[in-house]
Amino acid sequence: MNGREMIRTENLNKSFGKLHVLKDIDMSVYESEVVCLVGASGSGKSTLLRCLNFLEKKDNGGIFIRGEKVSPDTHNLNHVRQTVGMVFQHFNLFPHKTVLENIIEAPTVVKKFSKTQATEEALELLQKVGLEDKADVYPSKLSGGQKQRVAIARSLAMKPDILLFDEPTSALDPELVGEVLATMKELADEGMTMVVVTHEMGFAREVADWIVYMDDGKIVEKDRPSEFFDHPKEERTIEFLKATMLK
Amino acid sequence: MPSFSHFFHTLNSSKGLFIDAMFLTLKLTLVSILIGIIFGLFFALLKISRVKILEYVSNAYVFLVRGTPLIVQIFILYFGFSGLFLIPDFWAAALALAFHNGAYIAEIFRGTIQSVDKGQMEAGRSLGMTRGVTIRRIILPQAFRRALPPLGNQFIIGLKDSSLAAFISMNELFNVSTTLGSNNFDEMTYLLIVAIYYLVLVALLTMAVSMFEKKLAVSDR
Image 1 (cartoon, each protein chain N blue to C red):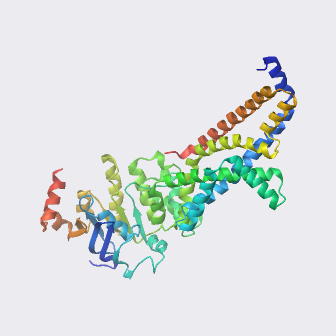
Image 2: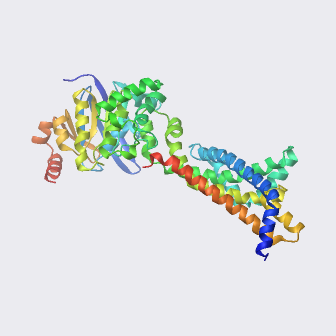
């Protein structure tokens, strides 16, 4: 079920000083697909995700958004980022703004929506993530899981075509992981195109269309979840799965 | 040392002159801190502008102010200004103090701006906001709040530093105390009195700052 191509990288390379973090990454994500990036810490998966949103500047190679090659020299990245949303490991909510103000900030400031319209849409989003009663609360009063759901609503408020998740549950207490994953699954079911860096193998198996396993800055294996988990092909994948499943 | 009865008698009989002087001291401090905050914000923004030449300008300003005594700065600006333009003494003193306070306030703002978590900038940028808008709407409000305790401290330092304006003939607290002291051959009594005025002002300021901080702390993490 190949839909429209949403995002593609071609020979993407990135180094931090002498450390070569991404090596010739070729990857594509199609409309409504959920791609889970898995791998050990330091394998380059977060860096890859951050390159897709241009928070990290690639060294060379191409990034294509809906077929169009995007680079800082030819494109206004502020416009590009409106279509590629990002959810962070540490939520990064604005602590001096209430939940509602967090969500309407970008729509009113960037898209120049009226406050009334932005508020109306924000309340719908809050309802969707199950936090409509928290609109006027400051982030400091929320649990980690609630913060992350607000962060997801904040990203959705810009109506992105693609949503990137950078280890969205890694900073959460174990009992709060489920509520965030449930929200993400709901988004996936609605057809949102998602790229998710995660260590939650259960989520990846259940929700992902593709699993991409990275090691040492390279994509080692890309496969459907059932194949990936039940019949991994590469030696390194088998090692990785053994290590994660046994924990 | 003056006797208690003499001290309280003098405190009472001199209060008219001292209260006038106190208002001048307050006005001088308030004006110089407010202008200093504008200077400070301006130079702190230059410092984080990522434009090398602007960073150098900001560094040079802080270096000059921190590297020379305030009294020298006051004299240079006072005689410099009054030689070039006709500028009232009050403004010569206020601008000199503002120029001085601005450098310290610039350092305060630079520090608190840089102390805001990197993720805040990334979150703003990932939502399509420009760097400038993110700084203005997301970073600065948080940096201002964190700057309040050190700003309050700078306010108190500025209040006491304003006593140096006595040397360019401002009739502020310190000038009044030394003038009265030498006129009445009673320096110690008037010095002790002026110390009390400064202590009361600093105590009031400290209270005001902490009330303001509490008011802003509604969303504290």
